[in-house]
Length: 168
Image 1 (tube, rainbow, N blue to C red):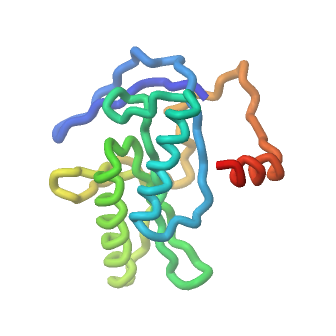
Image 2 (tube, rainbow, N blue to C red; image 1 turned 135 degrees about the horizontal axis):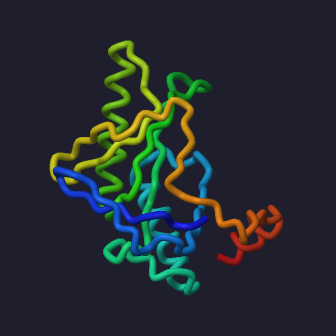
Image 3 (spheres, helix red, strand yellow; image 1 turned 120 degrees about the vertical axis):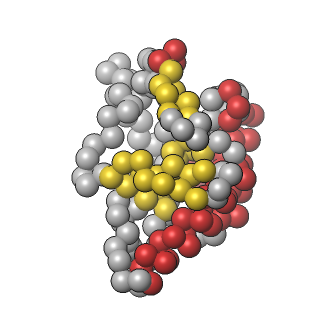
């Protein structure tokens, strides 16, 4: 993947900085097994340490070399998940935890009132501890990141992952 732009936001607006356009990007996906805000933050902190100590990245929020995206969804019952709500560009671990807590409460309230949680991307305001809708998805494709035509997708053998996990 290649970066297309860096988003700079304040309370009034968001701006795009194209100075990083074309820079390589590593996306790492986790399983949907993180059920508590603290567990999610601890997992992200461990990932940050791993990226830094393996010299893959400086993994620094303040310099833009680490950005986290979260998808948050509640279960209506044991087997039925609501639509996912995405949050991109979390700027600190504290904001990440506050965002999760706030969003879980928001989704629970929507479900409690008989509503449906919409699939959307929201922006979290660390000062007010509230979020607002940025974009509704409705099945849309995310065009912000461009596939690198010279770099094929990497698939790692599950046995290799298991051995690496044991080592770590």
